[in-house]
Length: 355
Ligand code: ZN
Image 1 (cartoon, rainbow, N blue to C red):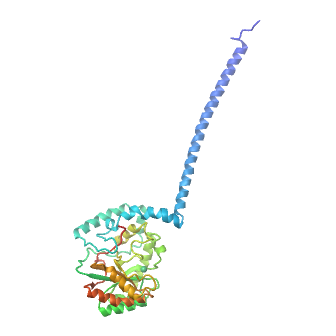
Image 2 (tube, helix red, strand yellow; image 1 turned 180 degrees about the horizontal axis):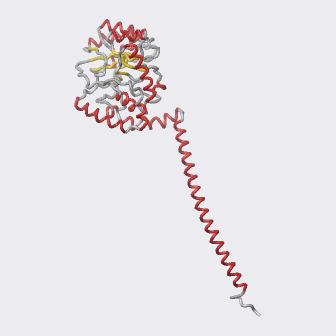
Image 3 (cartoon, rainbow, N blue to C red; image 1 turned 135 degrees about the vertical axis):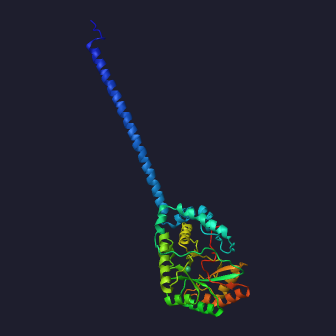
């Protein structure tokens, strides 16, 4: 006889097995899907971390002191396009004339004030660490001039960098002989205090050039620049009792070492009241063994019809040729209708720009 399946013991066993298999299957599926979710989530974050690590590796690599990488990638990004498009004329002080070799456009006073005020809010957009260096050296301030002096006619401002040295004495003798005044942007490392005092006593102007004159050191950061400048400033003040209010950046206000932050550095120095001067005529006497004939012709050829000349010369120890060329340069300028004056912070600066 055939046992009836429905309702039999076997039937209920199968129902129970079926139920248990279903529960197990649902449970396994549930655990599986949960596991998949967790796994993919983990894998996602792992991928994120990996990419972040890769990115930071790339950044580190780019910032590494590899000359080629800095030259081809970092430098154009920092100093190239955008930065270069903004000239000091736009952000800093009034009526900066850009390009070396061109003539300064005389400012209108009202405009000047407006631009000065307009320049103020720029400081507030600086990053927080900016405030740090603004608090450094609380005595490193001078009173800026309210206005630029009116300049009439042809004026030559002779400027001598990198002294004082024995050559400074030669230059001072020549200046005395022709009864003219000039400007000395001094280096205070290995400072000869007696010569510095003589410069001041003879009514010549002293400006700051630098203490160390080491480009890589002073242009390492704004803090580093301020430290060097403050050392030079204190040395000059101690030796002469005069607080210099003008200065010249080693290498000029725009150079290969400060491209990334020259505008911020310029702004900080102006904020402290210091006025800086580049040049529009160069003696070309930086290179050793430049003869006095060459120096003379460099200057004469550099004038180019400009009425206002800020002439760069050097009076460091080895610059015999510069000192030797000076009388001829002075006589040429005098015979061409130029008068001579020392720089002070009322003289509208000639400042370089990328424009
Ligand atoms: Zn120099």
